[in-house]
Length: 98
Image 1 (cartoon, rainbow, N blue to C red):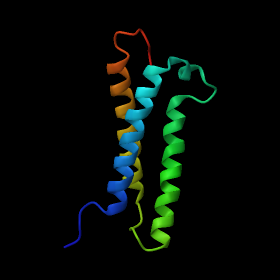
Image 2: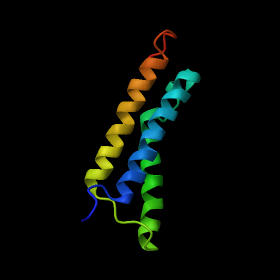
Image 3: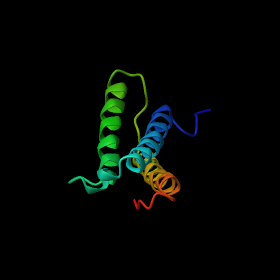
Image 4: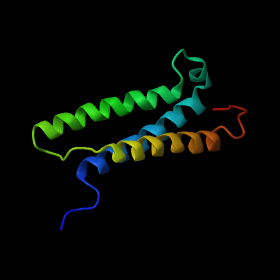
């Protein structure tokens, strides 16, 4: 019986969730990141691209299955939601708005 979630989706979702949490922690620690020319939410897209390239390489050498679009969407929105939730929680008393 095949697994419901493939290895690629598990790797991608975990790394994207970690990206969202770490980005929220960085923004709440250094609020000047909010004034960068590239908004912090774009960093999530860049991380998604980097993880995707690594997964493509793993697929090409036969170490993982291919990641479908549903897995990408779930991972991206999980990362964005965690970024907002953790960011709002950490910056609650500091007067920092993400």
